Image 1: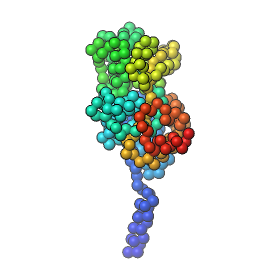
Image 2 (image 1 turned 60 degrees about the horizontal axis):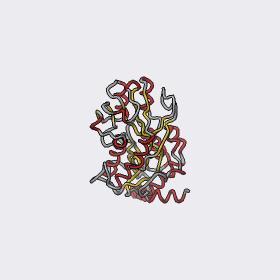
Image 3 (image 1 turned 120 degrees about the horizontal axis):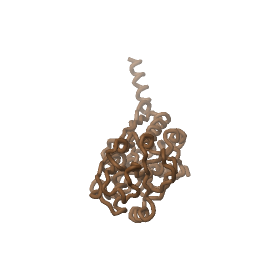
Image 4 (image 1 turned 90 degrees about the vertical axis):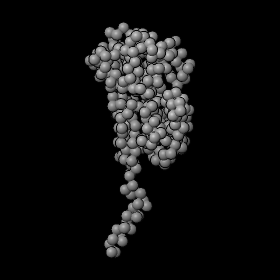
Length: 311
């Protein structure tokens, strides 16, 4: 009986100290052929290794829009999301009208996500306006890519009625371009994007510029777009720089997440940036010095405290 009492006492002390109390965290990334997924995997590895009693797993998704919905519904705890989508969700703007999420809170700005309009070299497409009448993937329905595609098409004077729309993920777009089922595809991701790299090995492709008057019209209406160059040789057969536009990739959580946990997640992540850099080229862009940039909605209190204390 004394032994049983002693064992029970040990269990109570352990519980009081938090031993064995696992905190399960799910990270919503993006498609496996995009940029979010490998970086999210590296983050999960870092957190699992360095934060006691934390168990982090990564789930592949169709990215920004679905990630916001899952965060709102409590299905996931951390999401990758474009800064434009986070802004729209917080403010109940399209595509979140009537289903916005006022409790979305960014915790880190990660890197630039470049809009990459990829066309088959023999499609004859040279400009965004040249998409008229063509078979075009605009990304998964409701995704950040699709929102970017609609906005860019609009700036070029086009609507979905002017093209043959396909709603495909990164991997599906690459596969359908490879098979000749579509002529062009929009992708918004860190460069290089794995799906486009793989495509360029087997097919001759063109990266279509988003610049000049089109880029000015786009940024005048949607100021979160910034100019960005896709350097020559980013993809096989790309002989010169291509000018496009970019948004920012963010990490976001619910306002209800424990501020101490958020603080610890950031502290550990920024202490292990070499692992992020090893996961993907864009992982090397994740730095403490830019962690609070490009964010136009309130930070999570735990993140705000972290950045103030680690300037």
